[in-house]
Amino acid sequence: MILDATAGNRTMYETKNVNQIIYIDIEKQLWRKPTIYADCTRTPFRDKTFHTIFFDPPHTYRANHPTYLNVSKRIRKAIHRYKPFANVYYGWDKYKNRQELIAFIYRAQKEFLRILRDDGLLWLKWCEVDIPLHNILAIFQNWRILLKLNI
Figure 1 (cartoon, helix red, strand yellow):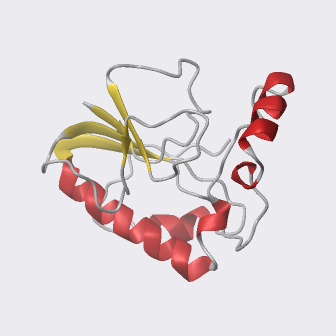
Figure 2 (tube, rainbow, N blue to C red):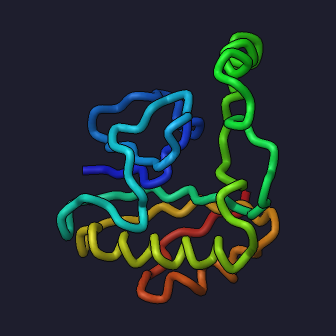
């Protein structure tokens, strides 16, 4: 079983709906609804449920950051008609500062340790907008790095 723990609008996928993936997110106003509305730091899943977890957390923090969700639904639909990828939502507005974002990532990885099988894989997607990757990887102390891509 596969979990996308921060599904957003599923913009990283070519195929947006795959039955083998459970998409979760806490944001209610997303263009593509998650399978389950859930906080990835406190999921409703049993221990050792997933073989694979995708984790694409917000890569920066910006209190009151203008986002796709700040505009009306009518405007979002109009934007989407002309720019299909304009519905990207990064969650930058969720965290006021670096400490809040780091605390969220820490809590999430602890939950992933609980719900991921012992032989499972966690895929972390990170962009060094404000925080270098080595600072983020330091949070994942109980994990073994198998692959690191710098694209």
